[in-house]
Image (cartoon, rainbow, N blue to C red):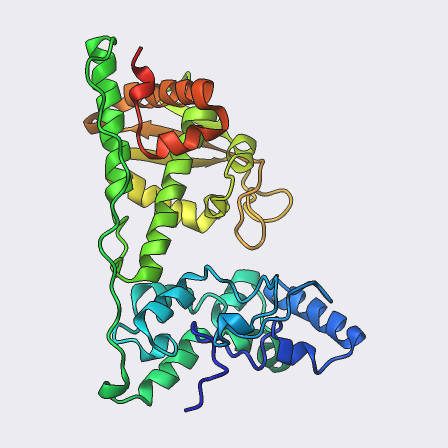
Length: 350
């Protein structure tokens, strides 16, 4: 099977909206119309005549990429993973389908796009805008044609090791404060060293995803520690939607309702952190609701309550989280989050 125009992730570069080969067949007016159709279907689209958006396919050697090109993405984890293994694309990997590609390669499938937008697309729109990104099914078809000796043994990576600073000794704090601080240090260390229930984290692409998810968990705690307020009605912290959404920074998935409720909340519960999203309206989707039609959290109409189990110190640990974030912010300002990620509590030393 000819796969030279199939991206390493399984996308078909001969019909991809971002592809140079597609743009070269159209007039300026045709491409503008094409991009509008892409936006209406996928929710994403190239900028018409945008600089350096004429992708030449990640199968093209880097030395042949246009100077200053933004795509193909040099840091694409799938691309780098396939290159490290030495395969043509994911279908040729001995681990196919690893947990990463099984999850991510179907992200823009017809079924998922229609589910996301709550509508059915015509066969024409499917073939024009969605089919290029039916990556998993395309990889499966390629994989089914291969013999065992055509598969390339996956190049695995060592376990991810978080950079955690050891708990400081000789702190001039009360015994109760030291106890709470140690509980917090243990919590941050466990999260940073966890696989977060992810499989195949010895595969490069999946390990990179794990690193990103750990950072999302860290950012969540940083937001809670910095912007949440003590809930006077219970031993918990309460944060409003605007403060939460505004301070996600680059951890964009924290603004996804499904990610928050179906994944992050469940994992945090295993660590003893209880998260409750509290809608302030019965309307969930739309301008009057607390999520957009595609499931993004709005910056209004909901709030979040965070509490802890007895095992990790209840409200005292959360109050120490606030003290820790405040001290880091006072001393390090914009660099604070980097020290937080390492659970560096030497800021409490005089």
